[in-house]
Length: 459
Image 1 (cartoon, rainbow, N blue to C red):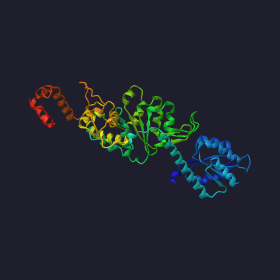
Image 2 (tube, helix red, strand yellow):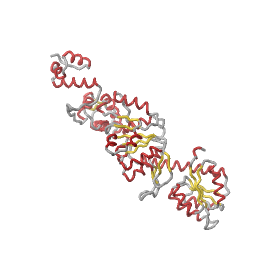
Image 3 (tube, rainbow, N blue to C red):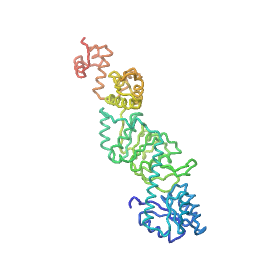
Image 4 (cartoon, helix red, strand yellow):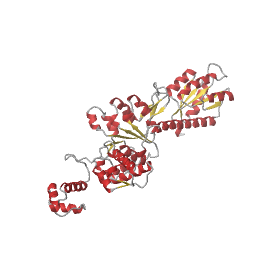
């Protein structure tokens, strides 16, 4: 009965002996008991304690046989969306049908059959849990999702991405909080998915929240959920993201945009694992693996007083920095093939490839928008090409000359090869002049030309 531990049941009955008997039976089976002995107390306890189930007597002080008082209370409890099992010593089929019509989930007579009562309670608590989960997932599925990300492959052929992959393989199986840094569009959310897939929680939910998109006044509702009536527009119960991610992974994207006044609310749940649903005083316990991401310099924000240092320490147990696309040139051919496959399926095209010249053009672009920009360029090219090969003219990107003071991290040999090719281009293939530009001897340049298999003409 371990799954029943700490489930709260409200026993509403004016008979002290009945409440005592039920308390002994249910507490011995792992339930927590809340008691109410009249109609007013029943409503107060139900609203304050938010029990998982109510055992409601049909008759209190108004009369002893009609069951009308119990039906009135049932009507008032409906808005709380708590399963209610009716009980009476004056049972009748008509009364049972009336109670079920008003929203009760079951009905039994006093004296009760212990086994049947326990089975009914267990069953109704199970139905309630599934209902809440389904409601939460419906809310989740109603939010925009990235279809491209679902099919995108994890590509890590470049040295920069190999470093990331090795680190991910080391830490994914742990429950350590991870902070992902990197420029916009580098694939931070895709990396978060990758970590979840390799974790021991991979058969549980992966829930993503864009922190920049949450209005300040809805922060608690979005993360922790709310009860119906908790505030003016709370017309239905809402399951928070911490509840949706239970036993799974919670990804807080754009964490650097979280306002300073809201940071203590997040810090509390990260420190203690405890939170309250808005409108409820019942403390909940979170069991999630936290992954966060930002393109902001959180260390500088701490210095500027815009981000709490203690919150940063909770987020950055491990830090992974996603490289820009400029730093992973070796991944461009594989990325191009991947996105071509995605978009030719999307637009019902087949057999599209990319020319060597187009790949060269992709490699020369600076990609300020990183993978996100790359994806859009390939999608547009797939749409525009009238043949089965993407050529440079359908890429529609401008190759901007790189400033002499602008240096992009890339493998040293690749940078050396590009410098030699650029020098030959400027000197129109004159090896001697190119060697002078590069400040190396002619023989040293010849050795590098052979090493990189660069074609040249003898002077």
